[in-house]
Image 1 (cartoon, rainbow, N blue to C red):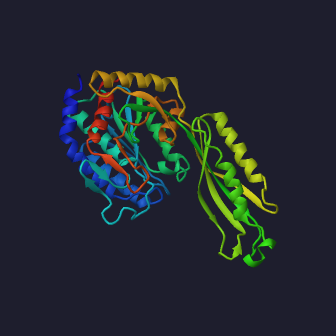
Image 2: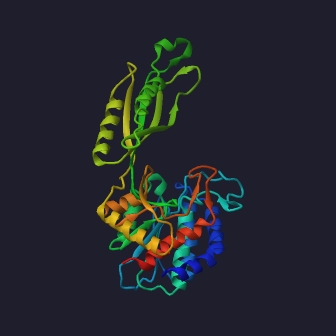
Length: 383
């Protein structure tokens, strides 16, 4: 087992990096809060500078700044890339005055799993590799800043920067939350639409003279919500705003529709679905506009990713790690964009846990070392 020393060093550093994760998660960093996201990046960059690693920063005017941290920048072999995002979905103050807490073998807090746990595991892997004298190839850690809104805030420039820095790498390993016995080889894409419905206001006592925008929105939502095929198109209408008073027929209503898809043909079908439902008035006298707010490509099954998976699986088995299988998931990921750029890519290298995007988000403490071991072993042995 070639990585025995590597795993031993990782185990010896585990508590130090659990503390680092605690400090990372305590810096609240919802996507729209640039100050917080930047604080996370600066915190990590300071650690990297102390270790003598190269730090590069792409400044952003709206999103947090993006970073590329490189160990062994002058090594001659193709680089390997680890990746994680610094932003979270949790509004400031959601977790109270002390946002991070440890309860036995679980650490709770904003982003401890999605995806600051992955960042901590990446740093632990890099530290262990260096302590074991690894210098064969550059190891890059790419820190994304607006992943949670599909890089909408930066107009995709953040994920484009990541692709530029990953160009020519032997493997791009994304550290979204992990699974004990699988790695992610494909994900669905996302299209998010904003429907804005107009009607005619009237007093409730004379509601027969009004035209309810909320009723029209409800008719549209019922039809959109019918798309629920996990193997094809799904739609969730998760946010709605309408009306001005309880005793007034609502003149306006708006809502969002979150579509998920697997193929380009399905994406095109979604555009047609949204246009048809927006242009059809189910309540006479209403009108509607529909705008594509954001989109993310699907992480499609590619031969280069399948070949990378087989290499990784072999490394895991030969080093006593859990055997893994390929899996597909429904959530969006930066790995999809990187895959579309022609770079060999796998996802799901983060630690284990649960409660993602909820106040119960947690990471299994012991799994931080597991995630770091997976990352480090691939960097150490991949050819």
